[in-house]
Length: 614
Figure 1 (cartoon, rainbow, N blue to C red):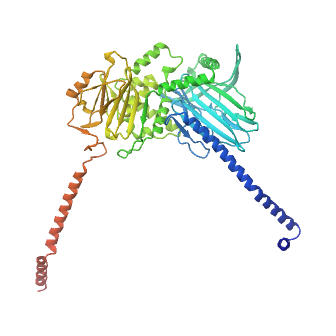
Figure 2: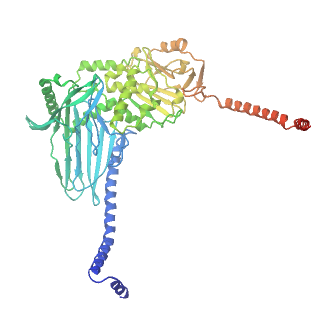
Figure 3: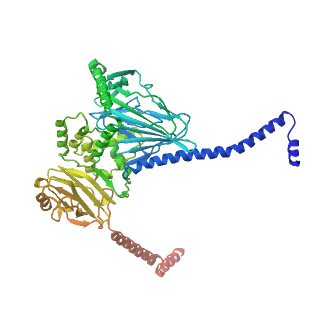
């Protein structure tokens, strides 16, 4: 009572007393409620994070190695790598917070972006999400995951987007919501629309079908762009876009789920002067959009997605595998396997794959396969695995465009024109050849990379040699090369494969399904570390008449010159030079001591001083 009396007497009377008492009770209520609010906040964050972590793990568990990359996408930080979907004709950089537009590509190589973003954003009303983005390079899919918490329960939203690999005008998105809470929720779909595209028109079209009506939004317009042919005059690209319609607000009942599928079709012309475009060409664009929408209407989303992923699976039959990260060689950086896969995906998703297009004729497909079997002189440049400018990380669209241009020009200038005309399959083979400086000639395939630059264990999988697929594994630790043929025509002597190691000092070995082991060595001057040919006599001829070297070394013998960056000599030579320099300095010190510190020098100095004083 005494304490309360003192508190009461300390409070001023009147209005001030009422204010103080009200403030006291407010503070008391806050002290009582804040712990519960804080506990609920921790529970909300824990529930959302647990939901997101489990969903990410579920996707990654179905992937092999570094096939999938998790790219966090918070509003306030940059993404580690750019989540991009493309098929060489259309492409989109996926960004739900700062969307861009559709990238259009065509031959001759040019690319530009139109101000229309085809990817829908989804939000659960009244809630905020924890989110992440995953790019699956081997299937060409981008997954965007959102987790919302209500108490201990979670609402999960998953976006799956891709640019169709076999239908080059199609971009697809699937949005799935799972409401695991006891409360109903509302999912809101948002599109950025045509706010930034001046002059574009939008109408709703309906096509009567036997099973119902096909309704979609049709957008048409033009976009000014400069091209490589003429940088002084504005050229226009005319575009027609079809988007399947769906409800913008979707109510999902407790413990229920709902799926939304969005199809986007993009047709466009080459850049032309405005007066060169006729009304017939514009109507043809619209008709192409209608035909594509009808074709998609006859397929389920799962069928379209399967068609897309199977094409990517075939393209990725060729593969580069690095079992250990490359160590720094002569100051050069390392290339993690994840980055290598991502760079290869960026290049492949930026070129078309006509071998898998549904509208490619059998005759055209046969010509493409013939070009794939005849790579010309590809690759006759420096090994690209050790060229740092080709392995820079990509997190912006302009970096992606520069990287694709750099790679394609490097391959083109290095004799890979035939393979580049094939599309994604040819680009994959050209890149595999370029990694270790593999070069085709009329009679053989040889690899020109310096073995001292190879670290760890590297494998080239399914490298095409005519009708054969060859695996080549290089193990620096064991100083061996393993060669194996996966497929070839049995019984046909013209399709037998033979291989020999550095210098072809030993007789060629027959390459078959059985792994053949060769020695990894180096010569002075440098010669290819591996030869493969259909003719054993040719490899014997190379050994006797063509390959010239003075010394053949094992890998543990250090070369005098291993790169263009400087001369490297044995350590014993540096020790010998150091000893000679030390002996010379000791001899010099002794001469100086004898000359200036001996007794004779001091007597001469005294006599000279005495004579000068007289």
